[in-house]
Image 1 (cartoon, rainbow, N blue to C red):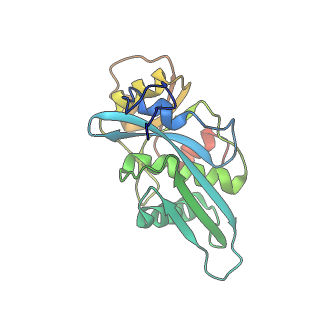
Image 2 (cartoon, rainbow, N blue to C red; image 1 turned 90 degrees about the horizontal axis):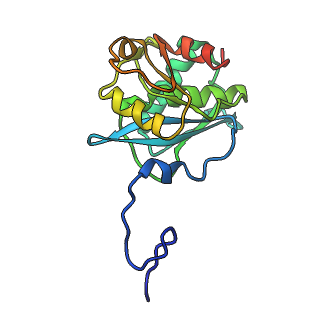
Length: 197
């Protein structure tokens, strides 16, 4: 049996020159609970779509499910969202997924996870051309991440118009970009910018 690549129609394996475009190719228009975040694989930036679903729990103990991210990290971020943003998720089942079946264990996805969960809970979509990058601490602060310029350039290359990043990273940017860079100090500022608070 001969294997043929569906994308380029040649036999055998072919190189994927831009993984971000492949991972975002089937992204739907603008449903609540989705946002794109920028991760790094080694030194290569990869944009991934985060999907969250919050729904009223039918049992006494709410369920948490994480696909592609660390389960403990998800429960920690939900606790931060409840305590620091006053979002009552104690009676909600929360499901979180990275589209494409990839597993990423990087704190730079934290802000995206928080915003996707808030978007699903409020049933309010996040603009499709927005991307979020940042680690979230236990007090709700958005902390800086490494190689921010590479992540922003990848987002710019993929046509995003707004990039929400830590304020501490924004102060250190040396270049100008074609997209709007929004610096936030905490999750409340990020949520307010997107109309989720």
